Figure 1: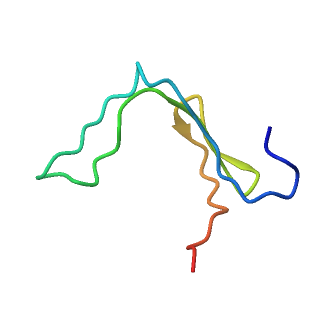
Figure 2: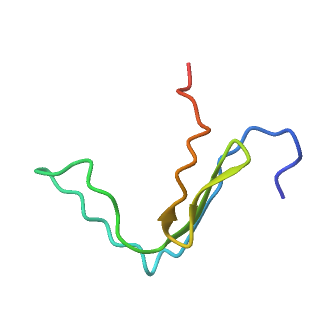
Length: 61
């Protein structure tokens, strides 16, 4: 459980479905599958593996 007010950006993923597509030629390629949900600053930015368009994050100092 993440306490209310805590700084956290949880990612829900299935390690068995996650496929890393990055290599030396494409180091920033996105992984395929396995990432179901990403929450940033309390807003869902990935839902059922798809970007929602929400961009609430900020660059850490």
